[in-house]
Amino acid sequence: MRRGARRAAAVALLLLGLVAFYELYRWVWSSAGWTWPFAVTDVSMPHVWTILKAFGEPAQVNQPPLAQILFHKSLFTMKEAIAGFVLGGLVGFGLGVVLVHSTLLRRGVVPYIVASQTIPILAIAPMVVVWVNPKLPGPLQGWGAVAVIAAYLTFFPVAINTLRGLQAVDPRALELMRSYAGSRWTILWKLRVPSSLPYVFAALKLAATACVVGAIIGELPSGLQSGLGGAILNFNQYYSIEPQELWATNIVAALVGILFFVVVVLAEKLVVRRAPENRG
Amino acid sequence: MSDQPVVRIEKVTKVFPRGNVTALQDIELDIAPGEFVSLIGPSGCGKSTLLRVIGDLIEPTEGAVTVNGKTARAARSDHDYGIVFQDAVLFDWRTVSKNIAVPLELLGWSRDRRAKRVDEMLELVELSGFGDHHPWQLSGGMQQRVSIARALAFEPALLLMDEPFGALDEMTRERLNLELLSIWQQLGSTVVFVTHSISEAVFLSTRVVVMSPRPGRIAGVVPVDLAYPRTVETREDPRFFELVTQVRELLRKRGEHLLPEEEASLLEAAE
Image (tube, rainbow over all chains, first blue to last red; front, top):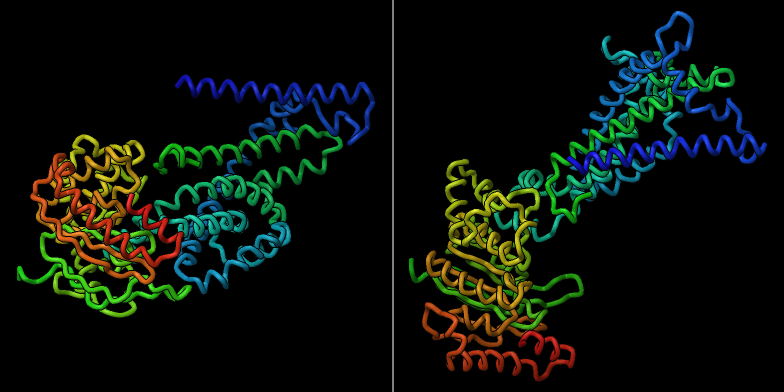
């Protein structure tokens, strides 16, 4: 418990240091009049307190405070991101399991999986919306397509790392299972999957942040206003007048990513039992 | 029934296609029920390959292996043997008890039956009270005892051991030698034991099979007529030294026409 408290104190101290550095940089650049790499103004770098104050004020007349709006929008984006994370995680894991059992498929399919990730997500998102949305039942309309886009970013690290983890089995452990005449299925569940978990969780940590990014980007071409992506697009247009609102939204987006990451780390602590030196 | 060998190896040859290496050539060996047979030889003599051929983990290029009167494949499917490797090969994500239970789970034993047998096995290898530990919390010697318990949990007639104590320090190795003999005598199983320690082979075995490399062949068989139970004093028995010398000479005689580096590997094996 004391270790936890010390760690929390360290995180708080670091955050405070960052804020101090930001404000110091601001002060030095603006008072010296330096314009490299960019001129520091209230628009390019609003004060930290301006950003914090923005949370408490309505962004538009007759609206609740920004914090409340962003809270609801982040819930919507989290719904998309979680669905994308689960969908992408399952697809990625399934692909890894299939590919570990077939050299032929591995040779044929892996290059396409890699190629799929070289296409910018922003270029694919509109197509996914057009393809997926008409097929979705009512309650999934709109956000379901965004979840698919988030899944598109999630499945890749999971598939690649699952495959690597399933392959990285101690060859003598495989001999041992064969000596018990274990079937492929038994070997998969009793040996390959548990020994691949550190690899899978390394991928899930990447996926946890990737799915949030995927959900936010996916909202842009979908024209969805209910999520953080819609808010970012909206505040982008007013940046030169009220930059603090975009900053505040970005902070919330980052917090959502961090929350996802922390949840995966906690799940890993619960699930993965390993020698201390082999823990990720 | 009692005359039938547990292991019958007939004209077994194994050629590895990669590099066209003849790992085993015309191996003939019968192992009777209750025997403790050691396979000894320098690295590259095919002793581990032979052990894997018996266990149907490697298929011979020619010849046949019969275990308990069945083909090696059928014997493996029937769980006729347990195997122990140089490293314990325990699953980190399972406790000691659950590691021992792995083969029992594959055999479809009920939870209660598994728990009961695991407790018996922990007692057998003197690890009662460590069932809930994870492998990394145990010393190397303790880990190897868990791996022996796992190999014996389903009471196989045959125990295959591939340099099981090779990675342990001398003191631990000698203590585990004594423990292994006592387990072997309690259970009456048959053991095939790969080692490159001459004294270990002589101390444990009813017979020592000396192998020579390139191609892997049986250079000679030394029956060990030391009485059981063998104790710390056995190692000081003059007969023990005679037998050690006999094995060493078989290893060395085969080394005469070898290349210098092969000679070195033989001498290393004779340490």
